[in-house]
Image (cartoon, chains in turn yellow, cyan):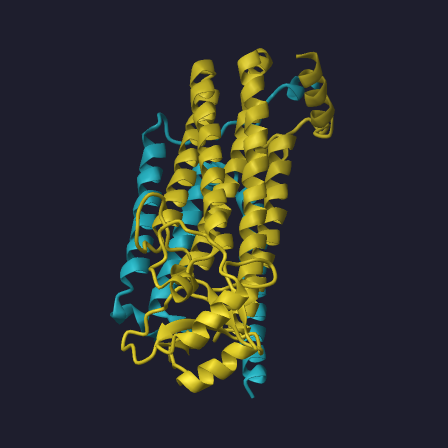
Length: 308
Length: 117
């Protein structure tokens, strides 16, 4: 109590005019100004991605071809997993509003319940993000990067549908099992491609042009095999896509993580009765603002990474 | 002066109860569901060009801004703050972000043209 009250007095001393500007407490207003600047930071990152996406329009991956997995389900399910992540975050925003609402009514038990659930939602989101990163980093079918850094895929000669064949299948002749992340070596892939004349290389994108077998063999000689995505290479297309993915979702994830930490600190204070003694639960409202902001940013990341 | 020290922000009453919270939740959920459905189906009528991108993308952006409005105005309670505070927070966003977007995307398109020459 003593500590909290001292802090409160220091901050409100700035409001020494005897008024509350905008009718907001110092802490709440400064949280709003911080969020304003953070919103500009995030918009800087997202628009920077927009710039490179416009510049490398031809090689920029389509997100729905990249993020197609869903836990325990086989096959391709574009958008489903991110939709679930969005749902989790919106739901944890709702529990946060309910916690703030309970705080206004000085309902101690209500704040404990709803803030607790918000923390659970935060951890669920972080877990989902880790899962998404794991699959992005490990990749799917694998690709071949030509000497000029163009990404091409394996396909069968004369295949009308231009189905992409995995590196795993090239080497083992068996369809890649679900959840298999075995690394295919450069040498194995090269030998297999040399022997198996039914395979050729496919340029992705709208045109989906296929190389002739002779062109493909020549191109394969100077190429590199790529599986998954990192800061330096990306089997799905332009490497900048991977860089922005790691950076923007990573920066957002850091916000979620620090939001969960702040929620836990306030949660402990609520349990210890700090705000009950103070007579109001405004601290819950302040971390609530931050938490909703994290949800708000995700709404934009969802649109500009996965939908548009 | 000290009587203000322990006071929280003045409370601008929003609607009573918790019904409004769930109402906003259902709106956000419905809008997200529409976005995901459109993203999976990709109706070919909506892929026609519009404002320099496809009509579908414009719909996505409009729906996203609608969601953002509900989160900020209701969940973050900004819609129930004083008018001057609302403008203090929203004006810099409303002016700077569209401007930055316009400048960078125009430049990105130009870089693409140069690169392909």
